[in-house]
Image (cartoon, rainbow, N blue to C red; front, side, top):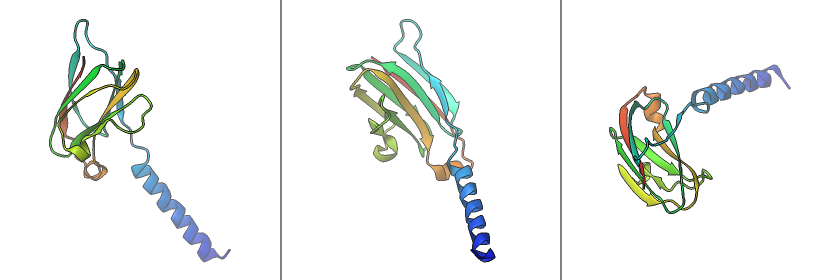
Length: 134
């Protein structure tokens, strides 16, 4: 291998490292949710940062209600215990509220986020989310 090829491979490795560093190792805040005694809902207000995951345990057949108050471009997904196939993806539906019967027992994740392009622009909006399990 010639020196030109080695130099090109070295630059390609540097570029790949920079891309991974800027996009692949994003940190999402995660918080386990528990309700106060006698309550079936809770509300949080926070800065979005790199995103927030709210983890809550629920049983099959219970209804999860999520209400998000945030500027345009802030979304949420509801992920089932296996983490596959979101029950809702509001970046597609455009909804600010979702309600659904939960298919199985386990820990559900409500992920609040913005698209990567907005995050790269340094946008850090505040949001308010209400989570209820009935």
